[in-house]
Image 1 (cartoon, one colour):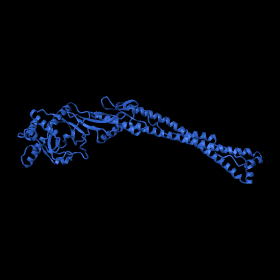
Image 2 (cartoon, helix red, strand yellow):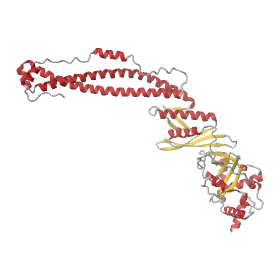
Image 3 (cartoon, one colour):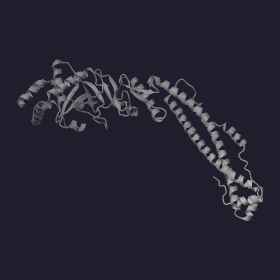
Image 4 (spheres, rainbow, N blue to C red):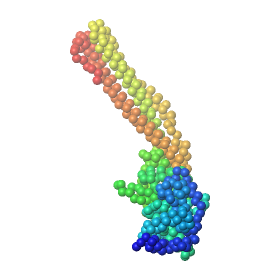
Length: 478
């Protein structure tokens, strides 16, 4: 088959008569597309059912990967490629005929089958294979849809499918809607603010460990739903897809509040709160805490239970910290007492070792009286306990019992609980350290006392003492 016949057959397939251009292909609208700053074209955020009749077709000499500004600048209405009125028109017409020659009918028929299925049901993951080929834009200023089809693309099947359907619409009057991503169109912010959208991504990453994809999806009646698709681990590194569909403001608000509350608890208190994520029967997400599913409806109950539990624990630890602080002060006195006793014993031993070096020193030490250590009085410890008993560590009674508690209430009481828990832990650690110190000092003081007692034992007579002092080996303090 020669090129001319091939082109004629493909034009016949499209039902496109170049000698009598359909009116629907002669229409053109001014292009005025202004994308949001820093918007990424590859991130298609909005999917819609767009009627064929509302899409204006333009061909652009820019590549698909070029900026939108370049595409618009180098774009021309489709009819300028269909009617060779002047030299430039002839060149464009030649380009269009070459595009027709390279057209793949099988690919167009695949698009027809795909759109037939999409007309019945939106894909679970919203996006679908090669949806980027549509290159459809929407202008908030002109309220028009545009297809900016690059003439250099090897795959122009979406363009020719759209041309075919427009011609069919003109003949039958039956307008067909196609499900397509709208390039460069940002979220409407009908359900969430821009910061809330960023929060949702962050919150879901915290629980699922993967970033979600979020879309605004419009059905054939222009009803919008906010759909979130992502992956999460379900069992030992086996991942599964979840999908959350929010169809109204109330659902969106409840979902956001639940997600935010759980995120705050898990990130503020990772040692106390950990929410397990599971795939629900409807393919959404379930948050599990203590083997129970946490929903927006049960959130208030969970907050109240956790608040009262943490408050009771705080009050119990509050009493314990008072006792521990009393014990700590008592041990500090005992440690100080043992240090003083050991120093006194040490001085006695040092005095003896110095005196035994000379004759007169030995005589002087023999007639020296034994000095006893009186030690810490029991009344001092008792008075200390009575004084400390009057002190209060933390006042948790400021939280009166009420029917409802907020997440802020739970965060505040849990911070108090964590602070008291840390102080209890630190106090116990200090007590163990003091007890160990007291044990060492007691042992040293006892050894020194044994040394002194043995010296005193030999002071019954001057001759026995003299013999003891002059021996080569003596007791040593351990």
